[in-house]
Image 1 (spheres, rainbow, N blue to C red):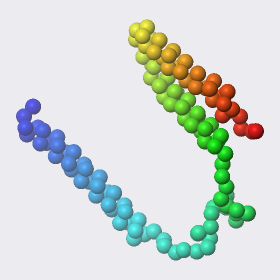
Image 2 (image 1 turned 90 degrees about the vertical axis):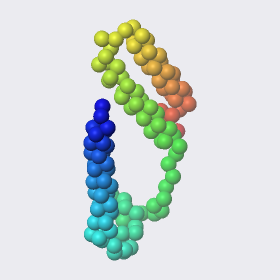
Image 3 (image 1 turned 30 degrees about the horizontal axis):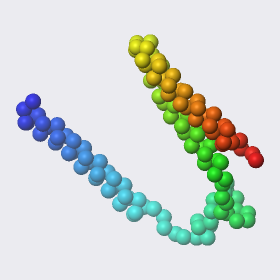
Image 4 (image 1 turned 45 degrees about the horizontal axis):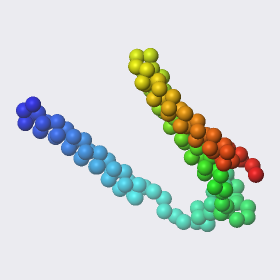
Length: 124
C-alpha cells in the first residue's frame, strides 16, 4: 500500500477525532452557558419519589443485596456467551461443545456455592 493511501486513511481518522473532540468541548460550553444555577432547599433535599423524605434519608443496605446483584451479573454474562455459542454450535467441532459444558459446569458450581452461603435468600 503506498504511503499516500496511509496518509488519506490517517487523515480521515484525525478529522473524525477533531470533530469528536470539538463536539465534546461544545457540549461542555453549552452546558455551562444554558444550565440553571439557582440553589434552593428543595434542590438540595434528597429525592424520594416526589414526596418529602420522612426520617433520616441515609440508609445502609445489607451486603447480601450486593452479593445477589453480583451473582445476577455473573449469570447475565453467561447469557452473553451462550447466544454466540448456540449460533456456531452446529457448524463447529465437538471441542466447542465440551468447552461450553465446562463453562456451564463452573457457573453451576458457583450457583451452588452461592446457594449454600445463603446469597439467594432475601430474608433472614
